[in-house]
Length: 129
Image 1 (tube, helix red, strand yellow):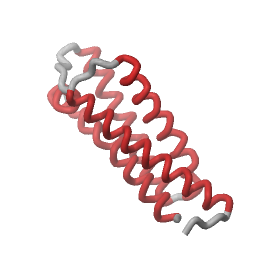
Image 2 (cartoon, one colour):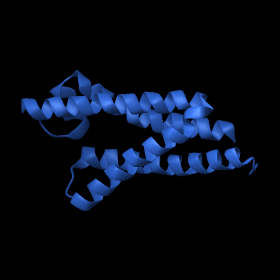
Image 3 (cartoon, helix red, strand yellow):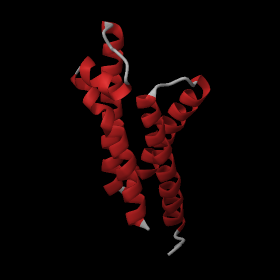
Image 4 (tube, one colour):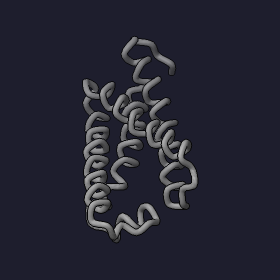
């Protein structure tokens, strides 16, 4: 069961690490999101967003191996994923690249649910195996 928790955190962490490539510049951001980032203020904000996703992703991967941080990693993951899914769903009209991000976050949400349930069972000392 502990391996399931770790595996789910690693998958969600990896999903959060993918946007880190956006820190390299507006060309990479355009590849990720399918829109031009020629306006300097928007580029700064999106590159900073990439750094924050990298931090969260790295923390989640770290927490996969450090049980004491797993609850915090799941909370951060849920906040990140659910907020994006809600915003994308409520605004709508997004392009194909953002639809890919939506799908990746839907996969991340499934992993977070499975991982957090396994984590809860482990904390209670219950075995589901």
